Image (tube, rainbow, N blue to C red; front, side, top):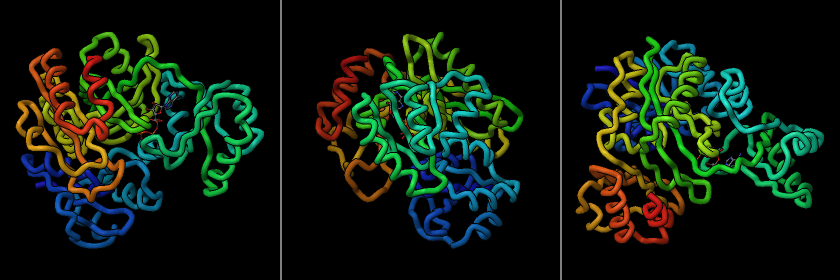
Length: 376
Ligand code: ATP
Ligand code: MG
């Protein structure tokens, strides 16, 4: 029996617990906000304090990247923490992320770092308009972002950027060129301490208002090869241990990395039903020093996020190939409450199933589903 402590007590820790049980890997979750050690499935409080939590763990890992630095420090010093502090920081700070991508020679959008108005003016000159502005720290699900389309809006946008900079002395803004991509794809893979790497098929992702709504595993060898090369460059340069995700923009078949996530990723949830070994199990295998499991796709699969809803009709549960995963969370508008994996024997059948599912779900709650299914 191995005991893994996960920093963060959300759905990712929950799904790690579900995947770890058959391997006799026991998970506890550390809620960094309350300092409580909680059961990842029931949220029952099991204890309090990081020192106690670390003492009882064989291995420590994280389900998110916005972890207070003092917490990270203590975990790193215990010698039990995987991936590394550097990897977590690269996921949580766009300045570090961008320099990591540059040093690994991985293509990403042209960018500039902004700390004051002079930097902003220089960034407009260097990056050009339209541009996307993102807070270096604390962004997720499209939050902490601005679009600057034309010169007339420069002053208005600056007011908001200045506020964000003022709110947190460690904050910067990263300005990126607006990338005219055809679609977004992501790659999830695992690396263990021996340096073995196992990569899943790419997923094509649809975002609605900055939030992932649908992911579909795709089989495109040329694109897969490109993405895998970048994955290996990033994972090896970080001496990464665990599951890592890379998000890409696909611009006419050429991939640019948008961002990295040093953890299991929403666009990898399809692997629970669609791959030989799911991403949660492979993360645990990697951080526990075990051989990685096969990442082979076993059938055509899509993942549909459930946002702000806490139930679906019985007909959804009755649909063949449909697997509903709830996170046990309190209902809140726009909140990620669960997801549905939809599986079929091939792409055409998957399209049929997704269309059928879209008829059973409220179109207002799942606006991306039908158009995306039709486009498959
Ligand atoms: P998440 O954590 O959900 O992945 P995030 O808040 O970290 O999101 P990004 O992934 O950087 O933010 O951006 C959110 C979305 O905004 C992207 O998926 C993409 O659709 C769009 N976007 C981001 N950067 C650019 C860019 N440079 N050009 C065009 N669109 C962009
Ligand atoms: Mg993103």
